[in-house]
Image (cartoon, rainbow over all chains, first blue to last red):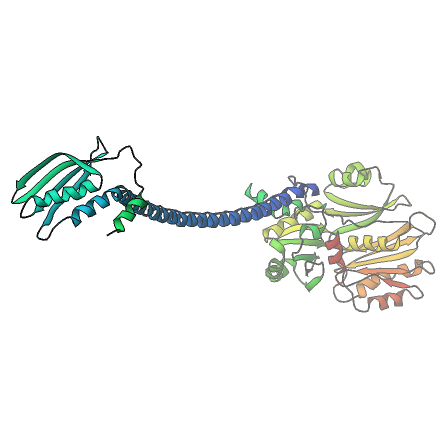
Length: 202
Length: 288
């Protein structure tokens, strides 16, 4: 004989609204809920960590960019300064190169001055309309106007000839104005080096 | 709604409700301390069951149950999870052997809802029943309580702030336990002969089984308190009728001092098989 007595007979008044326990498979609902919470926590913390790292990187990039921008501005300023200096040097070079053909003429005019004669003003301008012509204006403080003749004699030796000369007396000084024309306009123009050689000759 | 969501998230919604009689006690109160009350006609006992089904401590006193409740109630409330307790009603019950009861499928459930359809002429109005069929014969053990007494007991306990999780007959549960421990082989090849003695909080039930047949039963609640003599007097008439080599199977809710020896004295030449262990009824309640 086999008697199974696993259950105890219960005389308790049963509740009418008693609900059976939910099936075990329904435990998946809270389990999935907790798993999703864990997933959210992991993903959220990872995202926050990445956001923090990205923000740090962004700030680093912004700092590097601003530093580079500062360097660029400094470089630009230095470059503009350099360009300004280059421009001035170029202008100076151009002026030097442009004035180099006139230097023998000026040196000759200055050397032609006798004792007791001083140059008050000397101007040599190239005529913008006819660049081959030079406008000479010379103001001298001298006893006589022979000095002007001697100076122009020296200028002629440099293959210049004058035309439209005017001479006047202003405030006790002799003022001489003339246009100078290069006698060999068809000949080869002396190079600046040739001119320089002439400059160093006594 | 919030309660259900909370229950879903802490998984309590997947456990049976505390007053679900179909679920085992350990699943209804997992990890909680509960109390087993033994209510007799003039005695009251309580046992505090821990989360593992072991008895932490217990007390049993004799006197007016109403007065004893006044003493026990604070301890019971303090040690029961939200007031939930199991109650063994060890008084005003009747255990009898009946024959030719219906064994149709679902008859045990029908016995609770409509006992008349199962018991027919043996049905008494205002009674609640439980039944254990002998699988090899047409006899059955029938336990009956007055439904009014059950209702009154439940009302009294509710009035005192206690919630009844299970209401049982301890003697009947112990007797079934002893029957299941001895009758373990299906079929009639090895018929069992034994005298089963179930003792619970002063109540006694003795069932004589001869070759799987339940031939005689003597059941009486509120037989004794400390003195075992009334118990022995109740059992001694079996001595003349016991077949030779018929063992005596003893099962008590708690060990009773010298009872096996005294049984051996009134049943000389018969083997005394003691199934008693400390906190046995509490363990049965916990596991069922």
